[in-house]
Length: 320
Image (cartoon, rainbow, N blue to C red; front, side):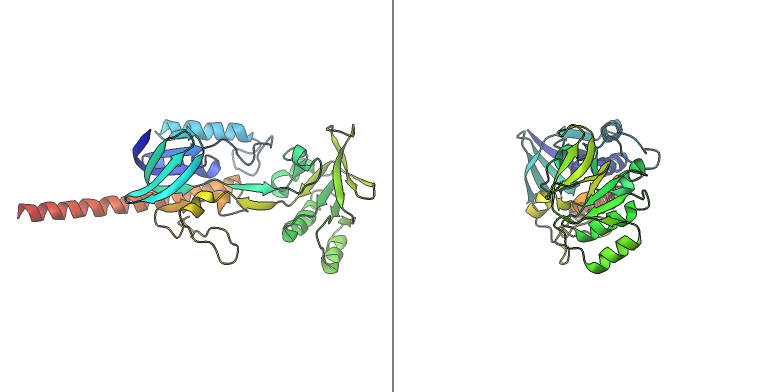
């Protein structure tokens, strides 16, 4: 199946992709959104910090977004992109279903993958009793026993430990394999954060299995009791499509670079959400993508007006 008449193909149907699709569809763009159905926040029961949508289940939020996209004529295809290339008149995107989509512009909103520490129980409890964002989940565990496990992103670990102290007076930092300086230790202790050294080996449930979380076990066999755990996983952007299309990277971060509108170094290729911004929450990703969609609309419109002017000039010359 070949689809030759799309203005924009959006890859990723999370908050960013659906938000952009909605804005573009309302602006009368012919838009299709492709998504393989693996949202980053799927394990979470609720999302927070999104005005008017606080406490909504991520699945409910996305279902509503898909419904709104369809209402304005936007299409959604459940598939995975296996190839993306530049073509003479735009871009060609091949799906694992065999479908081939040609589009004038591409917006990549594929998010990121959280690289979790290899500690028994972390992955199994991810999104329920193990979290990464105090802004997203700190309020729900206020006043409870909290353990922060040091991760690869030291700044993220230190920020978690300090910020969670606002929510509870029972916050413990287990540096794990993270090298926390004496200065940072002194600052955290002064703020009321306990620090317990040692390698974390596993999370402990109330039945020594998969029951309610009761603590974090260290290599010496001791257990630090807690009700919730926070980690700072390494964010890995799902940017294979952007790389395949030749988009340049930021010299400092190594992530694909995009300007304030979401435009990359390749004309016609745009990006929004966590694929270029690891700090973007749901509401941030949606807002950024809305602005990107408006920029894409202007880019498409400029091309249409220019093409019309060329046709008119050519027609006038022929009549003369």
